Amino acid sequence: RFYRSAAAAWPQDARLRERAVREAVEAGDLAGAAVLARGLKPDQRSDFAALALMTERLAANDLSGARAVAAPVFGGGLTVFAIRALDQLAEAKATPGAVTPVGPQTEPQAPPGDLEIAIRALRLDLAGKGPAAVQAYAEARAGARSAYAPIVIREARALARLGRRDEARAALDAFRIEAPGHIGVQTELAALAAGGPVPALTVADAGGVLVFAAAQAALENRDSELGLRLLQLALALNPRDDMSRIALGDALSDLDRPEQALAAFAALPDASPYADIARAAQVYVLIGEQKRAEALALASKAAATSSSPSPRTLQAQADAYRALERFAEAEAIYDRLVSAAGEGVDWRLLYARGAMRERLKRWDDAEADLRRALLASGNEPEVANYLAYSWVERGENLKEAVTMLERAVQDAPRAGHIIDSLGWGLFKLGQTDRAIDHLERAAALLPGDPTINDHLGDAYWAAERKLEARFQWTRAAQLATEPDMKAAIQRKLAERPVERPSQRLEAARGG
Image 1: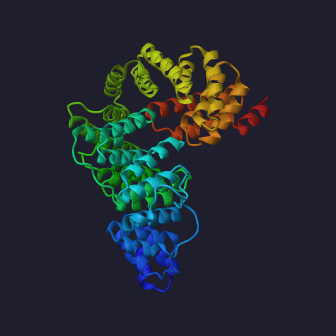
Image 2: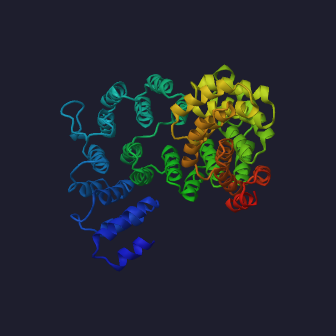
Image 3: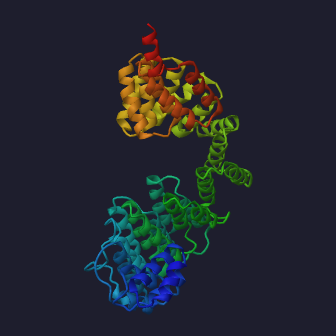
């Protein structure tokens, strides 16, 4: 709103209007962005303003208007790639004769280089040249470094439109082997099995696929803001593309915009095949915002709406119980999920169930789960830390625990809580000097952690560094939020006083 108002107040400032375009796209207001972009002369428009205006034209099926915007644009980068790709898709639909199955490839270079043949396939498909299109789709799938689900789905639809439904299913099944459990592919297989009409490929649909690919490339390159804006443009082209909407919510969450992320996930209807992903994502955003009761209410509602809730939905509910420290209820759900998974159980579920059993003081069961999780995960540092720290706290297997923690620290050298565990294990083994080195490093990495400060205080006291010990304990008591921990530290401070220098001087004079 502020940028739009500023652009209206200073219409001669092209840079201000350009920024307003970007902000409008980022907010999901494509119509407003297009109005602002039209206020810029062609030589004033950035690549992104041109892309926003072009997207608005294609969403309205104005092919000539979109191509006119693309004409003066030149250069490179993801934004120009998207413009050139959309332009060539519009050309294929408007002028089918311009697209040939073979010959020089004039498609824009595609990020990360895998989509070049796929763009040709989409162009052939739009031009109505089905047999040549499916051949190009197959070439794209065979030559790609990794299969790309939206392209495979369009390939299957092209095959189905030609009456080659068995080949369509085979293409989807081949992708499912590479990426098991992909919701979009599963949904497409179900649609094929139902035998209904196959949707025709439109320029907006094909364009949304390619802009989504550009958005993914931007996010992989850690350009979160460009990735977010490109996702909004992909959704403007394909408003029903739930895959893009999930990615948008994830991007907003990664950018620490929880309210916008929640709104993006909430926009997916309950009938969407991606609904359970969206509801689980909402639960985790709410947990991250310390809205744990709200998270549990949402997770429980999602689990109750189905007679057979998905494992993802159940795990979100269990994680919400865990966040509320309702460990017995969480453990019961994790136990159900582990039992249902059988031999192929994900180590994360074993880890979660083991953690709950440890909190419920069922150590033998917890230890068995944690050992299995450690083996299945290939010595995941977090699992190793949980198991080894539990041993240290119980005074068991100290040497094995320290060895395990040394490896975990090598694998996660900046994980302050794991470094603290190693220092605490060394302290329990009586290696105080080595312990202090690690505990000091942990405290530097996580200066606001009361457990680390408490451990460092104990090590300092054992090393006769008593003033430093009391300083760490005092800090730990100030930081502690759990009443039992705070009380235990305060007892140490009361029971272990240190003489002031003036007291020692008076004692010396008296002697």
